Image (cartoon, rainbow, N blue to C red; front, side):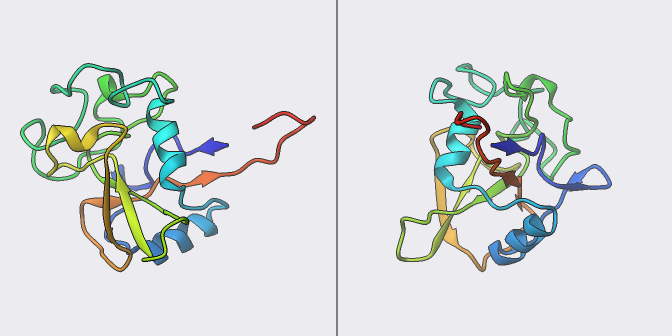
Length: 156
């Protein structure tokens, strides 16, 4: 599986304001798709971390969350202490990221990662916020994923 190193950005800032269907269309144009909620959670913490960067609570420099940032989206890669050990930027804070929940019949989407308006606990790897897919906001972005076919019988 291939993950974008940061949420999609334009002029350094996360692309926001897209409802789920438009976010999915944009991801498809780029050769990817919106990840499932379970895929996002694995990417964020590998099942071992409380927050994308580790177990310690967010602090200035690790995430753009309520009380830790300017109250608006910041450029991607502005919080180096918040990178995952795998090198992914802005997984916790700055803007929520669209994910899908294919197992749900109510067609509700799940947002992951928290935003610049979120409390600290929303940046945890396990937190998911269910919302209608038609919602759009300056606090919601997208991080595309590509499913890479296994080679030589091994998982990608």
